Length: 410
Image (cartoon, rainbow, N blue to C red):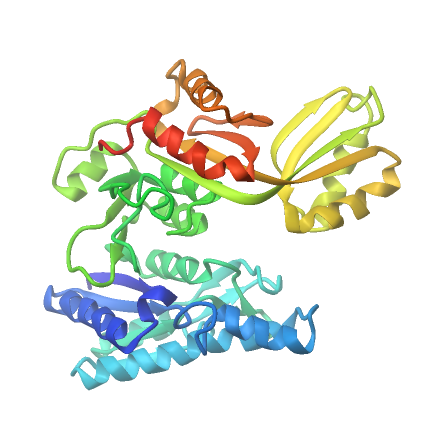
């Protein structure tokens, strides 16, 4: 049985016309002789009746600090409504379909509400429906704990649902449908003419996701990478095109049917609303336990850190500025000087091809300096270089780096 998992995001289901386009993509898959398994997000975005953000705001009007089981149960409703509507639409087209919640298709998670991790998936119900000639339409973003408590998987959770189902079902590929025609070399809101990347490695997609790109959740790429299942990012309104994601340039070329050139930089990602934390007050961070205690306290408070600088007399890092007061509160008992400044952004160049290539950091720094953009902190890995800049300079930094690395020519 040749299975394809097709995930449709909220923006690609926002209107009746968009939903018809999405159902047409499913019909085309059936006509190719493949067996689709559909995953859907809640319909629309903020302000739309059943979007996740609308449901979240609804409960927080009653209790701004709402969390836990009640919140997860409410948030799961948007995807369930979407699955029911989509399944009925397919059935009306002569494509028998059955809507399933996350737990009905066997998704078991841990108990971390609104950020649950999938522990296992039992695909028996899905195979039962497929063998009966029916199309499973699964509500994404959700699962259930060992004790039967409903959980949600956090932002991008429907991407994760599609990825884990792709692995369990040994799918030929996982297709992610959105309102754009693939992954761009830069944010099209900042650079409207940024071209679509035809092919990327898993690693590049993971890096871009962690650095702020929003088309695909990086966890979905990590999951499919483990099994080598190709991913495709496609527009819901086009039958062809998009971005194909695979293990290596060679395998990507084979899957795309064309040659893929190696690139030093694949794309630019950015993430605003960052805060810089600088901790001083000792000359002994290296040999004392204070450094470890700083990061332990932050982890216990669910404060994620990035762009870490560690020396004997200074620890500096970057956090989401919404977590600034939480960080200040949990670190204050240490008796150290904790200075937190908000209003920053992280701008990153990403590319698996930069590994071992000298001079990339020099080009990044030189490019921003020549445009009068101060850099407050940097970090690099084998596949990305990130710079902390003022948020007011974020758009200018993206445009400058886009031009420097000629990302209009791919």
